[in-house]
Length: 233
Figure 1 (cartoon, rainbow, N blue to C red):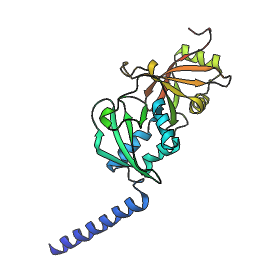
Figure 2 (figure 1 turned 45 degrees about the horizontal axis):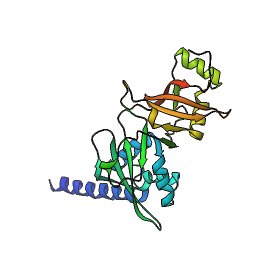
Figure 3 (figure 1 turned 180 degrees about the vertical axis):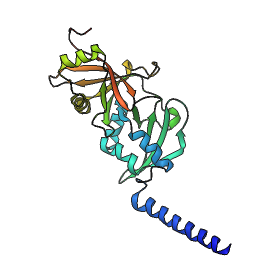
Figure 4 (figure 1 turned 90 degrees about the vertical axis):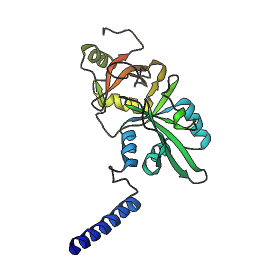
């Protein structure tokens, strides 16, 4: 019995030292099972969107879009200040910046949606709601070269041909370069999936609209809205 307890004691010490090593030397990034990282990964698995009003706040704080994404690498999730139920779920993440002190950010997780909004203007997670007006810039995407998946319907295929955007990867490149969400034309209560309206500029400088849902972790484009008449029905 004493021998068993001794082995258990050594196991506990070794496990504890290993856990400390991972947390402090790898900054939790390799531990997807930790609560903090499960939340961060859930957010990073979506497209990060910065609403207009929060872009203004970001500039006033002297922050960059890249820093808003990096908050999800080394910031601290404040679970007690987050809204973990409802639509959207809202997670408060805090990070200390040199010369600015600790700043708090709010990241949304709308149900069945492919976006996560970044809010800086509200003072608490309970004040954060899904944005319904204006536009939001797309500032970060999941690491997936095949993230865009146009619907196979004849109408969508025809629109792709007219736009000369047959390759979905070309569409993703344009969305990454100039894409934005038009919240006023998005419908989070649509069935069976929330529908977002993404606007992007094509190679000819034309503004193209698209109705997009989240399907099997892909941006499924169900329709393009063209700025000109076409033969597509």
